Amino acid sequence: MKNLAHEPQKTTLTTNMDVGTSGFDELQMILLKKASEQTEAQKRKLDLLALRYQMEDYINSDASELKTVGDFLNLILATLQIKKNLFANYIGLKPANFSKLIRGDRPINYDLAMIFGKLFHHEPMLWLEIQAKNALIKLNANQDKYAHLSLRDLVNRQKSA
Image (cartoon, rainbow, N blue to C red):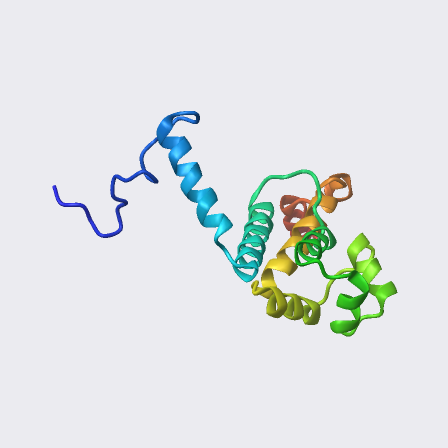
């Protein structure tokens, strides 16, 4: 049977391989050699890509531990070795307001989501989704507030009104 174009071919990267085997060690050496040959710009691009995947993974996970927009911003700025005050001034925020955003005391707005998306090559929605997920996690922790709400009760009240 002929392999379809979208099916992976049987190669080193698609074959199961146990850690500690000579095949794994050889693959690891190839990857390490390639990594050492990368320019700083290539390494930075890969680091930012890895952080974007962490952000997406957080959104799609059932994580109970909150990771704020500020947590991810801290990681990105540390990766890029950019000082927070410089970054705050660059995007037009007062450093004190940026600190509140980093701590999670101030939410991001659509404008900041656009700025972060442009600077870090992420979709602006990624930033807003992290913030929305965290807001829902906090609300779910306080579900007693919503315990009295019921569609059946609402419909019954409408009928008796």
